[in-house]
Every structure is written in structure tokens, then in C-alpha cells.
Length: 218
Image 1 (cartoon, rainbow, N blue to C red):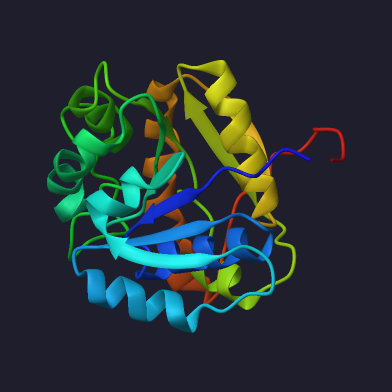
Image 2: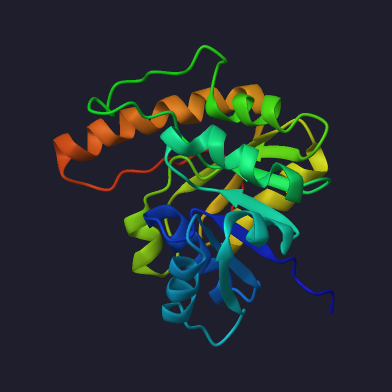
């Protein structure tokens, strides 16, 4: 049986990052939590005990260096700095950008950057270095933390079809359903939709997600 790839979750001590890390570890993937503080990442890894995949913690660059696939789940304010920090450690690797350009205090209002979206910023910063994909924008961290399967689709975007397929498998392993959303530029739609969902969640007191109808059952 082929060994599962090691996944580094940069921002792995945050709400979304820790939820995804927990899911992948439970599914048998080796996971490295990345944080600006090595000690914080190690403490979080110690708490995230699992009977399946291993979980360790390190600083962001070391975590990225130790992994086959790197998932970036940090606040938008630290997006560019984090990508520049891990850039030397991600050559040839799949980097999954899960960052949404939320601009406080009105995070329920869509405000995409001049570059088009966060994923395209990542692609520009890591051009010629990493295989940039984007995903996990519209799934609730609270639902991921709750456990069990989730009635929610994860749109996966990227200009590398093989890499998209791999990230779709990661979405499935996290208990969601991965859906091929096409090229990386389309990530703007999912990133914008996050603000819409935040507004819906506030108004209706729910944890809304998205579902693509008409697809065959997995």
C-alpha cells in the first residue's frame, strides 16, 4: 500500500487549520502543524492525539519543508508574509491556498483584492516554485471540528489538473465532497462567496455551506 503524503497545515493552530489537520490525521495522513511559534505548534500537536496518522508541530518554514503537500490557512493580513516565509521550502510541492480576503470589520461584504483573489496572489508569489491550488473556502471550521461527514462541497481550483485531483482527494478525506472548480482564477467566486455565507450565518443563526446539485453520488 502506497504511503499517504505528509500534509503541512500552515496556520494549523487556528480554527480552520486545526480542524482540517484533525480530519486528515484521523484519516491516516501524517500531519505537521505550522505556526509562527514552534512551541505553540508543538503544544497543539500534543493535544491533537489520534490513533491513525501522526501529528507533529514546528515553525512554518520547517513544517513546509517536512511535507509533501502544504495547506495555507492563515488570516489574510498575514497571507503574503507567510507565503514569502515558506517559499524556500515548497519547491515542486502542491500548495493549497485556503485564504479568503476578508477585510474587517465588514467581513460579510465581498472585497476582492486588485489582483483578483488571494489564490492568484499566491500564484504570483510562488510562480515557478510551487503548484498552487485553492480550496476549503466555504466549509465551516465549526462543522469540521464537530466530526462526522459534512453535507458540504469543497470547490477545488488550479491550473494543474493532476494537482487538482490530489486536492479533491484531500477534500474527500476530510469528510466533505471535493468538486473540480476549474482554473485558479475561478477561486475568486469561492472566496467572494465566503463573505456571503458569513452574512447568511449571522442572519439565520446557522453554519451554512454549499452543495452542487446534479452530480453523481460519490
